Length: 260
Image 1 (cartoon, rainbow, N blue to C red):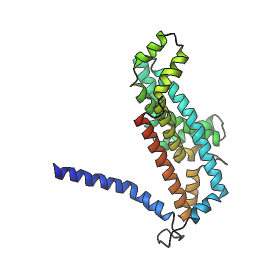
Image 2 (image 1 turned 120 degrees about the vertical axis):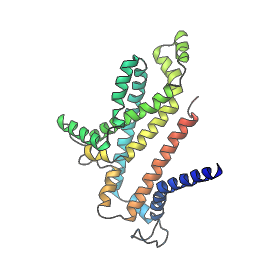
Image 3 (image 1 turned 180 degrees about the vertical axis):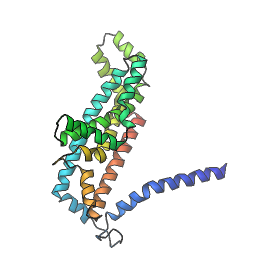
Image 4 (image 1 turned 90 degrees about the vertical axis):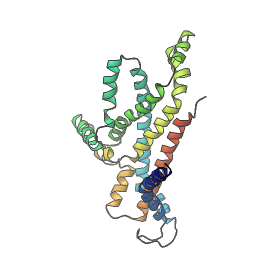
C-alpha cells in the first residue's frame, strides 16, 4: 500500500512538472538580460519596462480588458437569468433548452470561430470590437451557466417559498434571498469568464477586424518575427494574471466568500 502511494505521488509530481515547468522557465527567462532566450546573461527588468513603453501593446491590452470586461458583464447577467428561467420550465423543456445553451462547451473552438465569422458576414456586421465582444459573450455564457447552476441546485427552495409566504415580491425574493446565496458562484463565474476572455485567441482571430487587436493576437504577431524577451515578459504577465484569477475564482466558490 505504501509503495502504491509513493508511486501515485511520483506520478502527480511528474504531471505537475510537465504542466508548470515550461511556465516557470518562461517566467525565469523574462528576466534574462540577453536578447537570446537560450543563454542567461544576468537579471534585468528592462523587458518589462519596454512593454510599458510600447503604445501598440498598450492599445492591445486596453482592447483585451474592454472585451473581457463587457463580455463578462453580459455573459454573467444572461447566465444568471438563464439559470433562474430554466428552473421554472418543465423537466423535458429544461433538458432540451439547457442542452442547446451548453452546446458551445463541446463545439471545437475553431468551428465556433468560423461559424461566428460567417454569421457576422451574413448579417453584414463589420468585424471589430463589437463582434469580438458578442463572440466572447457567446462562449462565456454556458461557462457561467454551469457554475451558477451547480450552486443553484444546492439551494433550499423552502427559503424562497418562505419569503414569498411572508409577502415578498418576486424581485425582493431574488434580491434578498436567491442572489445573496448565489453570489459566490456568480462572482466566481465572472472571474472565470474574464480569464477565458482575456486569454482567448482562436475565436478572437476569426471575429476581430482592423483596430481590434487584443493581447493574444498581439503576442501571435510578435512571435512571427522571433521569440524575444519582450514576448517572454508579456507571456509571463498573462500567465500570472490568468492563474491568479482562476485561483481567486476557485477560492470564492469553495469558501462561499461574499455571503453576508
